[in-house]
Image (spheres, rainbow, N blue to C red):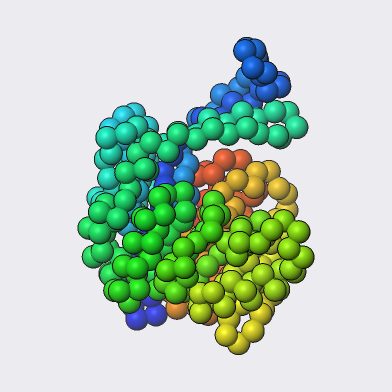
Length: 315
């Protein structure tokens, strides 16, 4: 089901971000140096914030064009098959010389994890790789960028959004300080409570409340900031002030992985439709609440019908 904007045109979203294969093993305990631990349970699956957000937006009815980089390997071929099944446009995805990004994740019974990432192909996603994506950005109703990719790709994508007049949404994860040139290129920024202080260059003991953090972020961009707070909902800072968006109730929490990507994609879809930011954030909160009730990331991303049913809205 393709959703249309208020003008009646098909809703289009351009996504610039990462793809990676997540190789997860649940182990009785993490091995010490030189130790081999048996009894693990292996669970491979697709990941990467850009890919997750693209799939989530497509399931919610958007025409999606994705820019990322994968290797000429089995992981890369599996990614392209996944995007084809999900209706994500991957014509511009770069086939890199390096292997597809892989994350090795060891999870102990307590839930404590240890993660090692080999960025591989994503290191080749530079400014020159982003430039041919300009037409897709220009034709989109909104551009979504996340930060598991090189900084120059982030900056170039946001700059193209500004130059072509396409609204930009930055999901600043994983968080790192942004270059000064980046801030004026962002229309909406969506950090969580952990990411916001990092973006602002604050120390751990900064002492700022959530309201002060979201206001500081909005002042940096000149646009709007959405601070996600898990079970506490979200705070929105706009020129008119700060507004609280309540959390959408989740009957049970099975797996929080991917909830942020689901929130970001749903927010982008709602904004592309022409909804006001407060209503869009409520829609996004419902998407995040749906995602935490199902194990895994891709299986947990809601369709439009599932989300409408959760919030009691007719299509």
